[in-house]
Image (cartoon, rainbow, N blue to C red; front, side, top):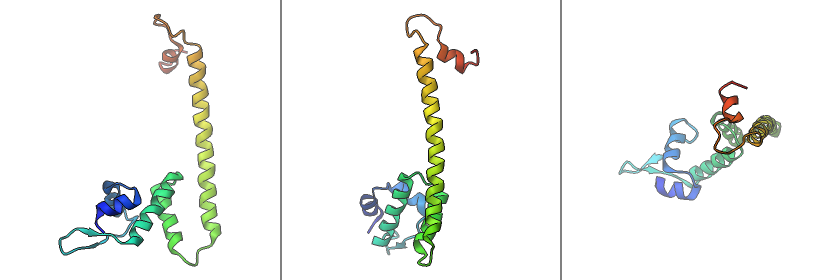
Length: 130
């Protein structure tokens, strides 16, 4: 199938498919006599794997590791579990940081008059004046 069909089946843009090929997440597909890329169902399955891993927050490097594990029939599930738990821990730290930023912004917004006056604690904090 051509890249357009692979993109539709996987939900990944043609540009991203080319990028994944360039960085080695997917192997270079065979080329037709016309020079166009020819993707297989296995390529689309690999693209779906990448998309699902991205949706779970994994980086390109981590996705590469997961793809290696996926292709290794002798892998230990403990390796996969370890990667998933490490990502969950990282996401937890990021969630806490985002929650703290949200709380700070809400606190600043509560203390801002929000009227026609120029004084605003939000601007003061960003300017380092408070």
